[in-house]
Image 1 (cartoon, helix red, strand yellow):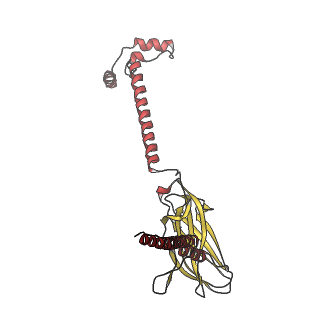
Image 2 (cartoon, rainbow, N blue to C red):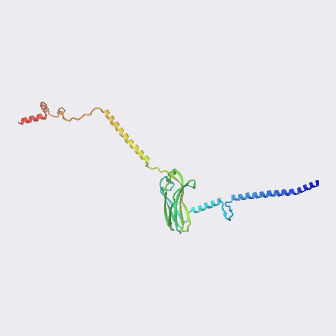
Image 3 (cartoon, rainbow, N blue to C red):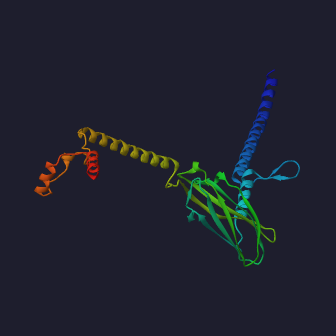
Length: 291
């Protein structure tokens, strides 16, 4: 019996190191595989572009690389042609275009010069208000005006654009972007920002509006009313103060009122001695003497 136990212990001593080595190798391989996976994940996050096989043999680009390529393409298309020159001129209001009136018409001209040897075609022009802190954020888009105007080499062309800034934008700074789209004879398309600056939307102080007009009319009517009331008060006060009846001219109906001082005294005594007769009595007396 003791001999059997010795054999069993001897076998355990022989097998135990092998089992330990096998388990250690398994753990090491598992750890190694985990390290490899972590390293691959770090490589995936560090690389800008990672190609993934979707089973069809096609490779799919990650979102980061695709977005960068799209931005590069947009920047490339947003640039103008080196053979073309553009200039902008604000005609209403006249100036550099840094202050635009709210609710009023804004007009400007865009000049295009073809300095190359190929024809250019002006496709359209558009404008938009952007957020002043980030011009990629649109606030208001204006209608694009198509022109389809051809410009031959060594020639110039001018196009016009107009829009109305909303009154709600008054007293606010906004980014104004004006884009001119054109292409050359080879079919290459260009989009050039002829104006891309921050502008101020101002509210004009008009000289006369409806409220001011009615205010002036009310003040004028009130002034006339005060003048009429003052005149009436002064007239009534004057009538109360002078209550005596005015003298009335009676004419020369009474003989006593006749002034005889300028006549000679002899003639005056003779007139006084002569009895007073009415015109009818004098007429009767003349008729009697004539008979």
